Amino acid sequence: MSRKEGSKFKWSLGEEPVKVDKWDGAKVKNALDDAAKKVLKEMGYVETHGVTDTRLAICTVACLLSVLALVYDFFLPFPKSKYILAFCSVGYFFLMSILTLYTMFKEKNYIYWGKQNATGKDSTPKFWALRSTLRRFEHDYSLTIELRRGKSGRTFEAEVTKSVGSWLDEDGILHEDVFRRCVKELHSQVTKKAKDD
Amino acid sequence: MDISSWFDDVRRMNKRQLYYQILNFGMIISSALMIWKGLMVVTGSESPIVVVLSGSMEPAFYRGDLLFLTNYEADPIHVGDIVVFKVEGRDIPIVHRVLKLHERDSDRNESEPPQQHLKFLTKGDNNQVDDRGLYAKGQMWLRRKDVVGRARGYLPYVGIVTILMNDYPKFKYLLLASLGIFVLLNREAN
Image: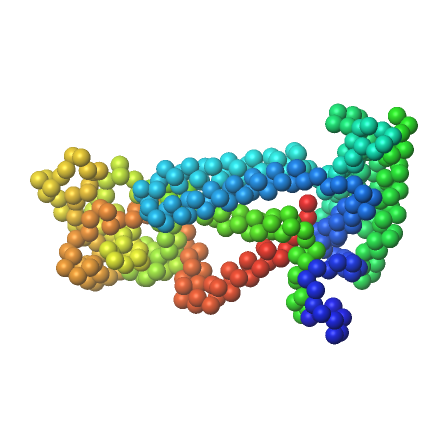
């Protein structure tokens, strides 16, 4: 079960090259998304988790509601538990709709939010974001990088759309060096746009 | 079959993604649970959906049919109604028809919900004798509180899966474990 004959089994896959089933769209997108995030991390940007954490919080509260219903009904069986069950049920489905709205309108197809702290020369922090699309049964992967100067500055974007075959080989191994060049190119494009403005 | 590759997605996850996998699993279970509890509240029955386990109500219901129940206090139970009841001390619901209704006006108590004072005798359409043999020792009649609900609608055959899972518990655990593992190890695309 270990990766190489005789080596110890490690839980974390660490620095091993990423290998995915090239026909599985979800896994391919996840692999590319993760690689893009890694590039930004290498550049020294700090990932901000606000949006993700909000989504996790909504889901957690929803699950807690259902646990409450389960436990309450166990100790105080129906029909005495009627009102709590009704509250939990309605609350749960209400939260589910909030979650759907949130992922549809706030998270959309973003995969990364990050912050670049203000350095010596310019005083405003910069906010970075990544969006990606890979449609079902399609092979064109779109990656968009966003740069915003300060909290209320203008947002600049740069986009690249290429077949996933540009970075994944026949065996499904992701060539991170090729992909990294691509992401860095996007990064330079958007930095230049912001500078020229 | 390289089982270790099943875990690859999970091994590459950070803490938040791992937590989301668990939450995802939790939400699937919670959705099913909340629909069930919600149905309990809406129908007023502690068991809003039951599976017909025997052929005692043929040709109306066959083994494996799914029944949808309501248990409203405002709906009085009459002779001829098909009711689902549980005998005290046993939790298997039985689906039979009301044969006799025994009422004594002096038993009626205005402060109680209607029909609590009534006594019912039931019998399966396909049975030769009434249900007194099924009731608890010494019990001759059912009370309103024993009734779990009245059949309001049904789906044929669908309940066979439930019967199979009860008769072969290993199949049930295998099915649930497979579903659980699939949900926990599979990472959704953003």
